[in-house]
Length: 214
Image: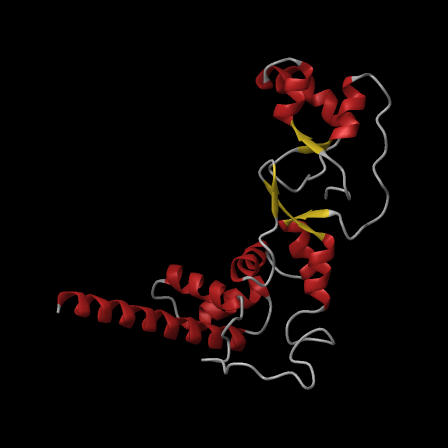
């Protein structure tokens, strides 16, 4: 987590501030530095540090403490955001790709989401609770072409079909339920919808090829 409004720096930047090559800094200075200034994103492969803490350490001054507690403007990694939502990181990225969550922002290679946005998504998911679904008096809008249209899980189901080969649909559904929640029966329906969309795409491509040949 990157605390609200805190500038950060990566190890390449730290080595530059120290005036040494990155490889030298990692070999000679990094172990002691990491003991005093822990990474803000320990669950990520990208090591980022608080800039104010880093500058204090390099200047030989006491390392200041980070803000205590949680704040809506904290920035969370995919792992932390997924944990808040009760889903896997793969589903979180599917949400972002489908527009159910913003793409987030990338800082020094780490993709991050604000705690505010993640909590809003958790507490007011479409179709759930006071913040979800159609409000009384609102027009119904266009009819869906199928029950799962717009469901971000549909993208997960399509990806699963692409790598499943000839595996039975029931077994794939059980694996998806274990990985992403919901029931195997729900995932069977999602897999059926995803397969139909894939067939429609294939038919569309065949039609286009025939038109091109005509």
